[in-house]
Length: 122
Image (tube, rainbow, N blue to C red; front, side, top):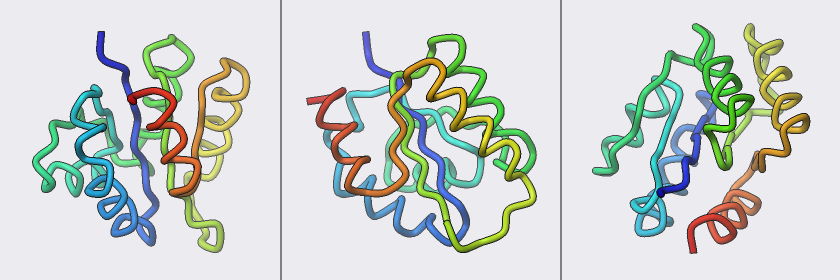
């Protein structure tokens, strides 16, 4: 059964996420990908199939957190903008707390994202 990887990127990190996905496209093509709405729409332009959730500020982060709590996600790659203000910060904190609580690997930068891919998909 394919591993499920969630992909999320703040607005200032979406281009970095697309570049990351292109760099790992072969490995990610073996996974079931889930993404927040806007991030996922960018990733779909690479040709990969992505299950879209709501946009992060509209509840997409919470939807992915719920999937993690239900054991439906094997890893999350979330390129956060640590210098930006985000109105949905409570959802972001909840997602991180759920990952810690349920022992779901969470990468917040390309280096750890590559390690998650290596560990789960290679």
